Every structure is written in C-alpha cells, then in structure tokens.
Amino acid sequence: MIHDPIQTFIHATEAFDQPEQDILLHLNKMHTWHQQLAINLNHQRLNSCGLAFHSKMAQDIAALNAQLEHYLADWETQLETLQAAQSISDHFDDKIILLIFGKFNAGKSSLCNALAECFRRRQQSVEYFYLNAGEIIESQEHFKEGATETTTRIQGVCLGKNLILLDTPGLHSVTPENAALTQRFLDSADGVLWLSSSSSPGQVKELATLGQELRRHKPLLPVITRSDYFEEDEVDGDICQVLRNKSANQRYLQETDVHTRAIDQLIAMQVDPVLLQSPISTSSQMLKNADFNDQAMQSAGFNHLFDALLHLTQPALAYKQRKPAEALMHHLQEQILAPLQLEAVPQLHQLQQLLNNASSALTESKEQIMTQTWRSMIASLPKLLEQYAEQQAVNELYSALTQQAEQLLSQQISSNLVDYQLSHAPLEPLQFSEYLTYEVIYADDGKEILAIGHDRLYSEISHGLWQQLDRYTDELVAQCQKVLTNIQEKIETIQQGLINDEQELQHIAQHLRMKNLEQV
Image (tube, rainbow, N blue to C red; front, side):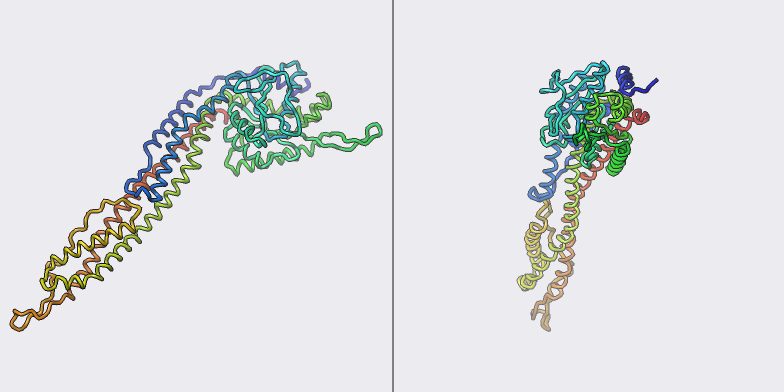
C-alpha cells in the first residue's frame, strides 16, 4: 500500500482519542498557591517604624508596599485575560487548535490556504471564520495573501472534523495592536506551527519568542516557508523567470541550521528543547502552481509536513487535556510571579544595599557624635571649673556638665542620625569618682585658702566624659541597628518566601506535565 501522508493525517484527525485527564487536583493546588501568596504578601509588608518618614529608605519602603498593594488589587482583574482565549477553547472543545505563529510576511496565510485546499481536495469540510469582538463569525473567504501584512484580526479555518488553524497577526507586527492581539490568544492553542521565511529563517527575535512558547510547554513545529527561488529559463523562445523548489540539499542545510540554532538558543535560555520538533521546509506557491498534484506534494515538502503534523498530534492532544490548568499556570507564572521577580525583587535588593550602607555609616555617626560633643564640652570645661571653684561645688559642676552634654548630644543626633526616629532617654547625670574634688592649697595654719586647683579634676572629667559618651552613643547606635535589623529580617523573609513560591509553582507544573513528558 502506497504511503499517503495527507490521508493518514486526515484519518488520524477523525479518530482523535481524548482520554480524560484529571486536572482538578492541579487546579486546586494552583488556586491554593495563589491565595497563600496573597496572604503572605499582605502579612509580610515592610515596616519603616523607627525611620524618619522623609528618609530615602522609608520612602523606598513605602513605594515597595504601594507596589505590592497594586499587585494584589490588579490580580483579580488580570484573570479576565484568560477568559477571551478560553472562549475560543470552549467553542472548539472537541478539536485540536494549532496556532500559526511567526512575524508578518512569513507566509502564514498562504500556508493555511494551502492546507485547507489539501483537505478540500480529499472531500473534507473546510470552514473559514474570524473573530469580531469575541464572537466567532463564519466566512466564505479564503485568507488574504500578500507581501505586506494582510492579517489584521484573528482568523481561522476548521479542517475536517477536528482540526483548527488559527492565523494571527505576527508578534513582530508593524502594528502594535496586532502583536498584542496575537499574544492574547496564545493560550487558546494546543500546539504551534512556527513559520519563518527561507530568506531569513529562524531569526534570533523569533527564537526568543519561541522560547516563551516552549516555557508554556506547548508542542511546536518549525516550518520554513517559501523554500523556492526564481531561475531564468527559456519558455517558447523567451527568457523568463521561473519559480523552482530549492534543492533537497539546500532545504536540509536550512532545516539543520534552524534546528541547531534553536536548540542552542533554548539551552542558553535554560529552556528544555524536548518539545521542539525537527523543522520542515515547504513552498506553498510551488504546490499551487502544480495544482496540488502528487509529485508537487512531495517536492514542495507537504508530504513531510503532514508526517510532522501527525507526529505533533499526540503531544497536542495531551496539552489539550490539561489546557485549563496550563492556562492558569501561565497566568500565575507570567502575570503574577514574574512581575514580582522583575520589579519587587530588585526593589528589595536596592533596599538591602541601603541597609548595608546605613549600617556601615552608624559607626562613623557614633564617632562623629562623640567627638564633636566631647570637643565642645572640653573647650568650655576650664571656664566651668573656674565658675564653681570658689564654692568647690562639684555637684553643681556635674549638673551643668550634664545639661550642656544633653544640648550638644541633641544637636549632634539631629545632624548625624537624621534618618531615624529615636526614643532616646535623657542623659543620666554625669558623675565621676566620689573622691574627686577641687585641689585646695591652705596656708601654714591650715585655715586660709591660698589657691584652688582643678588640674586633676579636669583630667578625670575629660577621661570619664569620653567613657560616658561612649556608653550613651552605644545605646543610640544599638537602637538604630535594631531598626535596620528588623527591616533586613523582613526583607529576607519576603525574598525567601518568593524563592519558595517559585519552587512550589515549578513543582506543581512538573507534576501537571509528568505524563506528557513521558510520552515525548
């Protein structure tokens, strides 16, 4: 019996076996994960208690908390993005949906029309449609083909009983609205045909987008289109341009190059290339020019394409069964977790750097407070000693020193610890050795005071004052450090929580896809 790839593929699409896969457990795990993440972010807000509200660190903490608040408020509305794609999936629930994917001018519409004609010539139903405001509208028109971008809306064609091709504006479309429209409906597909022209196959930008699709764990078939060239030939005595298929060797070299570079790029992006199938090289125009005859099916690469589509069927079916769970998984990974990793995590790192700098600066601030306070007091100490010398009023001297120290400390604290809100206690009364007094020199009779000295008093007070300032500023710095440590611990808790959340979500994804990986 002669192998007929298109008939084999049509037969396979008519006999799709869709065993039920229980995804409720996975969906429940993901919903629980999402709810717990929201609870954690609500409870793990950073607290700027102890910081002055005008400090950069306090402002950065407020900005981060506001960003987290925005995430939580926005998450519910983001779920609406799933509904549009799900509406297509629900409408074609019994069919496999293949997304025709690639930048504009990749030949997407031409390939869809060619595949549709192949089905029509085998007496299979072909029904075109397009989407308008979320509604599926039937159409009698083939897809427009041209050298410029012709697809300005999501359009599709139903081939036979169970196959849907979605033709879309390219993700690299010159029209931003078209790119956004394509991205919106990616989740509706069960598999992807990645098209690129043979004039520049497998461009780096396309490979980067391909990596995103493979992260979504969809089976993907690269198709090199327009694998043909013009050659001068003589027809009825006239020299004219004739379209030819590229040689088998040329096609093989391009297919191998695209496959090799795709795998290399995916590995570099830390994406498992297991679902990347071998590229197929085709020429829709050559097939049309030959009126879809059997020889053209082979020479234009379409027999190979239908063999590849047959191979794509099983992983696409497996994806279809778990698609609601995959769609939610993509949403959690790309709309929930990714913004936290891309925006909140760098903010946390920036706060950590501020904390490190602030912690290092505390030692210098302590030294500055002590030095400036001590120097000011020592400069005025001789005058104070003279003031209380006649009465030898040591206690009054200590009280005056204490009052002066409080004033000077307050000024230095306000200047050097301006980023903190400190509840520092008043300076304890300065006291020195109970035996420390003025030095009195009496006359020979021991009654007349000849002189009152204070050299020893000056020396002892100078030394003792430094020690007491050291103890006092130690307490201040410890209070500041406690503020920083509390914030640091909270940051580390949030960071570790996000790491744990990512690992847990990956674990859920691995279990969701385990059976499918065994089949690939």
